[in-house]
Length: 545
Image 1 (cartoon, helix red, strand yellow):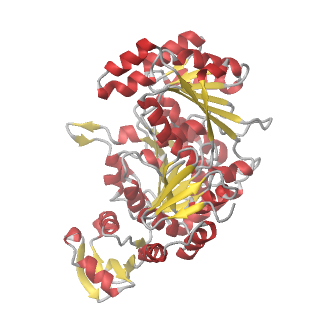
Image 2 (image 1 turned 180 degrees about the vertical axis):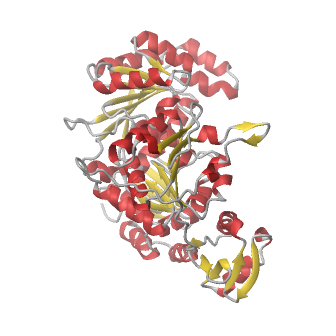
């Protein structure tokens, strides 16, 4: 075979031949800047986008490195126009800078006078800019820092924010390193975040994102507001901070549906922050309750839309986003870039697996043939109900039972989205079910039993997608999901990637109904697996035995 595995096309699509001996190296080389669009078995399709290139630029990858990766792995000559476009697109990042002026406060400084003139005349910036200081500098209204960055990104001129941050109220925090140390990639992530001041760290589930947050807090030594997905996450963050830092229980407040405590370190849920009463957000005062020096957004890919609006007013505070994937199903990755900050650090899952910090994973799609009655029921269902109908077919149950038998004695997690389906599986497998209405104390009791090995099989609804500490889960079986959500796939795969004490491979199964939209959505979710370098095999349910 001659030539590389990558076909670079003038429309900015990249075709990667997955069977090529250099495919894995190529995928890792283009992952920092190319977005995977389709991942069928033999050819994966990536696309170059301005946001992807700007995120790469912010994370320290320059145009020369991107061009070199394309030229190194290309099978045919790369279109010169595309290489020029990549260079010019990446060069747009930072031609405008937000800075602090000693006399005029917040200003927009143009390294390119023509660009500054161009954007200053845009109606989309009306009300955000003040008078010109000189032909390279324009005053910015302090309250418009976040919205200006959003608007400039949409104009194609993303601004680098060098305006600095307030230190916030000082509060001593130190890491307790008696019996552990930050892993090299965790320290690199903290350093990259701190060098940029604000931004997003992308790490796999199980790779210690909470410890990166704790280390950033220790470096800031300031009051910190931590926003998380649910009350389970609140308790886990509190537990980790008490165990890993000098903080005590009394220094950490919980602001959730259960408690309303404001302390030097306050952990709040997205749900309570976005709760409304008579159309007004009732808990926004929390953002101003202390002179926060750092705001941490856990699972930033799930950030609710109202939090973006609040965050536009927090641009003087350091902001750290933590996530396993920057993919948002609502397409608001640009708002994460503008308001939380660009990607500062991204460790490929397979890199961390190679270092032994997360388990290798075997990903399998099990296709189930429906009965004639089920096929007819699916055909007769309304289009809006078709995914639920396909995802919850009873023909899936024997396959789930067969997989549980195959992994008898191992920690098996069954995950789904529809409660009637999960309740039926709970009865058939004689395994407890955790759902949204399960009391927190009961959840944690079941988690403890599962974690200790006393409970071998646990069934969880969507509450199992996020921030559940199941370090010894060896097998995950997903029976239904949120349509084609790649972010959900990331969380579910992460449930089994904690390293196993005996070095075993983790197993990740998806059970889908053949010849239905269930298969189509599964293919969309599997793009995430391909992005991270995982292959997956397809088997027939009849072969499970």
